[in-house]
Image (cartoon, rainbow, N blue to C red; front, top):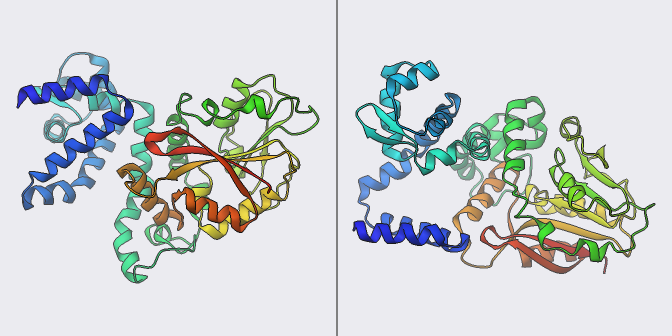
Length: 381
């Protein structure tokens, strides 16, 4: 068995991202096939505890401490560094070691492993904290909500699981206005997880499409662009292209927008008419999956009304396959349903929505096939 494990580790070390994920999925399937009922109870029944324990680890800066130490630390040493009670830490670290985030190397002695290193990254802390603080309560409310509604697919963005979980009538994004910590986790996660190497800018022919674009016309409008990471990446990659670069979002995001030279920060609600007319690119990333079909159509219609014959609408979204959707994308679909009655969509579903508002999907450029991320080139017919 040890030989088999060693071979799998060796294969994983040199595998492509797609192959690595297949290995992980295969190992999970193998482990699940060996479970008895008690194992299954423990795997599903205590998942909430694992996430809560990791959040405590973040609060104590435990994972960064173990990684920076580069050698095992005793419970007493960790207590001195964190201020936590040694009696609690001994129990807590023992639990973490049993489920994977740290490694137990001796009595009251713990060290970093690969998962510890992952948990010490900014993107992981932001992502897990967002899931725990904002999404987690929705998981708890989901079964009762679905039972209450007769297991109908939610279509009203302000009558979904989110409102029940948080006892609010606000839309999820409006709710963030009074929750600065939740908003920070969300914005940080959205920013940190977007690796420049996994970007629509690596596949889309921007320079070819924008060749000879006049300087007196808008070049790039980032609709619902948050605090402006996408606009900054666009400006950094194409600093010499002519035309205005505009970031648009709601006030609570624009007031925290990055001060990127050459980028105009504009307050705009994309459910109202688009004020920038005749731009070359109207770009949005991960915006439409936040909304049910009727709201997506409204946003598209507003953008369409501002387009000219040489404009391009660029929709950066997941484009799901018709079968065999992986666990990450299937999870995101249910999360979006619970939060905003929205969804991840297949290309056929995207085409249907675009056809309904009189737009044409010209081409889909996939830049991250592992997570089905792609930018859709959409134009006036």
